Image (tube, rainbow, N blue to C red):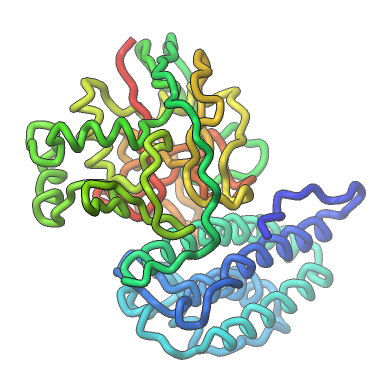
Length: 430
Ligand SMILES: [Fe+2]
């Protein structure tokens, strides 16, 4: 499980490397589903959530649609109906089953979806070994994209099953609880950055999604970033100060969401007999005040920052600050699947937990970088058409596959979304 970042032996050809990566990533996805029943894998608890079974099939559809059907003249579709059932949002790939109705599909069964995955796995192995060089050259970047796409869906599988389990009165646990280690509350420190004329965006070495390009110049005034993400204890102070009852801290759309949705705390927090508990992928447990707050919307992150007299960082500030910080931390390979307290506690003077634990909401709208051009064809729909009405998050979370993240990685969600593993880090002007 979660071993797709493992190094390959020296001397592998590009094709052998691609196939080994394909097998590893596909195996990781299947491992995530292994401790779920077919019933667990079929439920859609809200329109944003997709059933595990759908994720398993849709990631498979991606390879069938964009590689095998396009580049392998000998490939035969597993089931023509799957072109409709498992297309997510690609207009150029034809009509599709409505997203809010994914949970109504008792058929195909989990077993049939497993056979679909096997069919595509065998087809891809054949293609990678035998494709003529021109077809291979064209297909190889799409295979790499398909594997990064599948890793994104690995995170979605965990986000989505957590929501599915959270609405079940039995509160099932996805995995055994991770032991809680008592750590001191992190000292609240600040790190200074001089800003100036800086560059952000992908440099061009290694894989990146199109939305991370082109690299471009940005002017930053001096700024400061908090050494740590905001903790549950700090967020509890906001709740106890009446933060959810005072419109002065909230954007207009955020206040409307608070009223309409009855928000009183982050998603998955509960208060029973005066005791705060939190639902995790390891089940329900007492809230740990030292761990980063998670499952807040952009609106809640922004309201907290205003209450604290600070602000959220822009994505350019975050990226410049993250440059040189090792891309390591509490990612899915640790199998905690929940943000951890900073085990080094009081250590200060450096940025902590920039990668892993929780995605960090930024103050930046998700729009294209200057001179961005989406690729032609269906693949151009991957990111570009969503560049409106969403906010950027940075850094990855405890459910993000290890090896999937970069400092330039731009995640994005609508400002009201709470089911992502999203928290915040404060910023202020320097
Ligand atoms: Fe997808």
